[in-house]
Image (cartoon, rainbow, N blue to C red; front, top):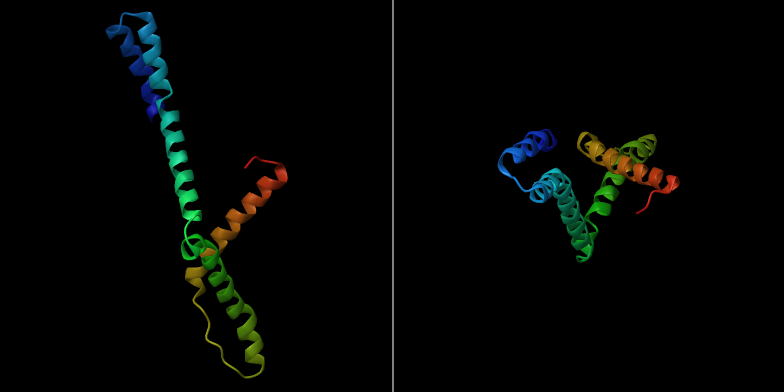
Length: 123
């Protein structure tokens, strides 16, 4: 959206700013404004991720713990429960309608990162 406004705004500079150097400087600042904002957001996210990773055990391990819980629910539903049913033991099943989207999202993100590593994408 910002990129669509850059052309008309730089056209307005011709009407209101007479100095060519000042006009070029303002046009450059306007055209790089969206990129600077995107970089600031990315840097803020990196800082947040770094602070999140430096926390105590419970703060830094919540993502792996979430994955372990989802895999445990998957194992109960599709491994433990069917084997136990063969011996006449009923094991209650976990609600996978909530866990599967989380697990699939985590596996998908992990798979994409593995794909990036095989292609040699920088960290």
